[in-house]
Image: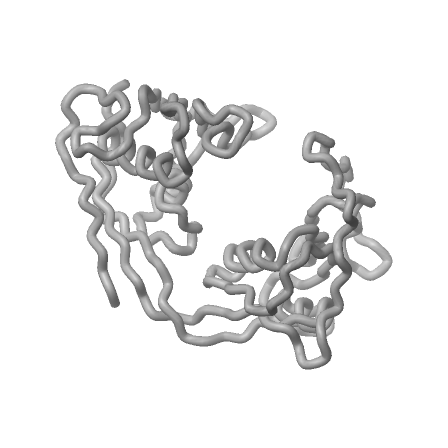
Length: 275
């Protein structure tokens, strides 16, 4: 196991503008407040604005739990966190102003420093050996169709499917569209994917809670649909996700040993310092 300590610990003394007390990039100003309780219709969870969006100088986190904030700050997925379970139960609303020209890497450093300043977080990175996957082409070749050259405009709303319903094949029926879309009823899942295989591998990493690398050599943008049973048990009711990938689109997940990036949260306060 390899360990890389992140030196971000310092005493919070006043508020930082542009640079934190340890000379790391910092938000110009930020507000951190506990999220209100969910209403009768539940709650909306999301991140809005920031680098690469239409509002690059302002970022808003709504109803984000601490695990999600740490994951965004270090550019990892939930499965790459080693942290107390209560981090998923504590939610916050954060609004922050970013300096002009802030990059994604600088933004992540700013969020790390915010967690250190306001929550007194202590964390480090580790590389731990474990099972990972390569996404490869199956022995009979891929069963993929290239996505339409004229993609749906980004500002078009997604299709409205209403309540999910089972189709004739016993899996959730997907609304007609050329957008990525997924539905789940019980443990039966249907998904239309319209992206590159690199992005498909990233999605699989989240689903399988293990890193997945696209080594198919296929660089295009593809549109395909998968149906699988999500309980992990291959039986007469349908294939597992891995089985669907192999049988329905001609690709294959090959397991192997590899190093997994892990972020270990050693300490973090439940209550942040005041704004």
